[in-house]
Length: 421
Image (cartoon, rainbow, N blue to C red; front, side, top):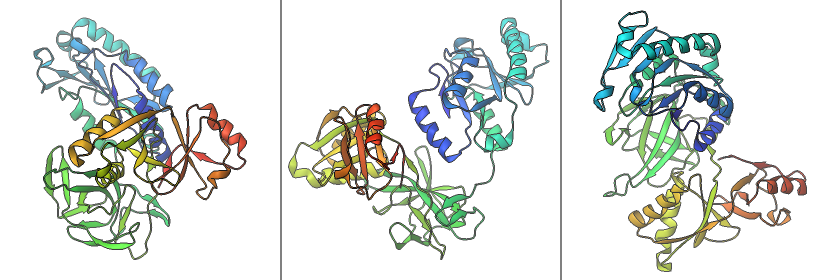
């Protein structure tokens, strides 16, 4: 979890964190941009604990911030890491290491910074939570690190500690129970789809995390949701813009597979004779909605293809009025910038211009019982009944109080904030 040192916990962080809590995912916190003016360090920790409901344990501690950013103190090793090129404005500073008891440290960071550091160390030792690996693994305690990604300071320290605190891949829940990473049978789940990564070839990559067994290039496996055997071709791993083909991969690894359009986020791939499906990946509830239609009605096919492919990537969510087609749809996004991304990608990748009409809805809820008769659901005047592309029934609301009123008016109606498919 990356926190901006000047902004603290932001809205999108809260939403992401809800999903992490649902999945009991261990959280490692990196408070970034300490080379810029940052908020009080203790207030940042308090905000994380109060806003997100998780205890924090600082592993290192910043010495100054902004132009006065000198380095960090490592609480485990009792070492002070000094960013020696801070004043030179370089992007790749070097780290010089000193013992906290080294008398020369005062000359390096200044008497005022030294006095403040010693005072804060005393406060930390007396007030902060102690590191507990079991609590970290359970997702109840977050180790906190400070640094600057731009200048590459504190990042290596974070990675070294992360490797010590992390562990082998964990089992993943499926509809037949937990699947062990040490199982001989290969299994994986798709967590991301990316279309047009290479515009010249209009390629589409399905990223999957291997849960168990060994992957070999070109192996034949069973695609559970597609109910058919498939060959995993053109396997690759990526780092930034670099790609490399892979011949083998193991539990915990992430690989990208060429996707001819058959995979969706959450799909299960396995070589096991006993077919199973991994637990679905939660879908974020959108907070902004717009009605979208193409300008040129002759480009209906390109519009439907583009909007569907971008939705399959998870960048947007698309909904329809009940019993309507894709000529006019409702798009839901978490952040308003995703509307701009949608407009740009449809124009540049699919040659389709669109018109967007912002809608007043701010809240969406999935109906737990998918067989619910939507005609019998009694709502409020600001409620709208819609469905997703899989036909699942949903409700849109302008006001939060309308959700409670709708629940009061419909006995046994259960609404979900997150969807798992």
